[in-house]
Image (cartoon, rainbow over all chains, first blue to last red; front, side):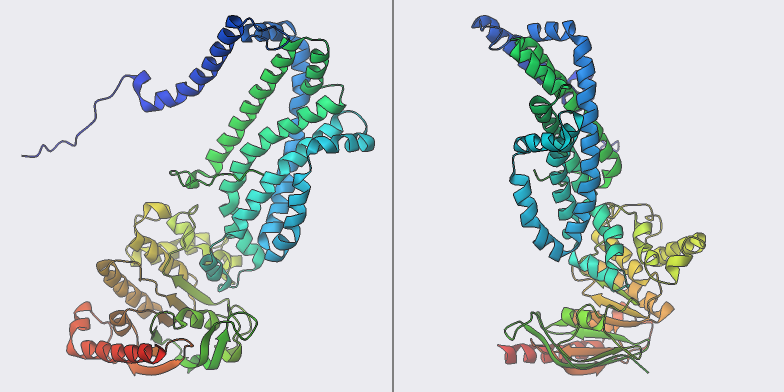
Length: 275
Length: 263
């Protein structure tokens, strides 16, 4: 005789459940890295100006918290402005490039060439044009971040199923209607995936520009700190940057889940192409 | 009255002489409100025929006239359904079915004002094909057969005067396919659009169509046609009666003859 009640797996205690593990593991990894780092530095008696121990970094970070916060805010705002510009331009240019094969073929080589230029090399030129300060950093963040957005939106729009295009075109849909009804929604998972890549790129761009040509920002703070052999402070700057990077990444990831939940059923969610 | 009129239409893909010649001298007439099925060996240009009729591909030679007008661009009145249901994964079933209303005039400009009426219409249509209760499901929550039903509804929501079906049931299992034949027959009897159905299932062609056209191997043209005089509404048992069986046999011979001349 088969039992009528549907079988139920016995519930495991919270900390042993897969879901709980998934939430805890990333933190364990980060803490683990710091612990190993600390042990290595102490065991091999590494000099502080070569590699400071995490404890020294945190202490230095706390000691200099005020200038760190001021400069972090500067870096954060610069990055966000550059990133938002990149989203706007990347989205519009991605639609333009993706919606016509002529545009795609004619613009793509130029874009690849442009993207191959190391952005560090552009910063001195930006300084000649705009002077030392925030604007070169915003532009550098923008220049690095817009490419992955453009590529992903363009791919999403360019790969609309031909049958679906036929269905819409046989209804008399214009090219723009096909893009609006199908191409754009379809490219949204790619777009949001690319945002996660772009925001971290934008931080890189800002810091690079601040290191080369600014008198504010975390990049500048690290430059000044290392020139004074305050290596723990330079590392504290790095740490603050990666915390901001993770925070913005999480914001983008949350936006992605909200907007494109339909594409996240399993493993078939599109992955962002690296720009 | 002729609704679709193809006169010696040829189509060669590509721009030079070594492009594939998909259609050569295809002549085809379909009356208003008629249900026509096109059968033929695989790769004979059936799908190309659909694209030419709907104006998605301009013919290389010959004339295409639909509803008394020469076709020069996409028709804007045709409903289409394919083997692949091509529903939009970010829209619910109901929103998918209502997609054409957002594009086709005059519905497009009325949609906002008469939203409730259109919504009711879409729900009725879904109920007609047995999708009541699935309006708010997403495509991935539906089975293949249900997706195909929704795709049919999408092709019909704007009351197209021409319905083009390109092997819409080919990827479904036998039972689902037969159920959908009945659903399609009901839809057609209720609205009487002109239908061109491309299929490689001869029973399907005989069950659904008023007239069955046989295409030759590539380059395709129409080499035979048979009227199907069975009374409507037809039932599935009828497909096993001598009249239908004989007709299927005859069509089959035409197709195997077409295949052997090609080889």
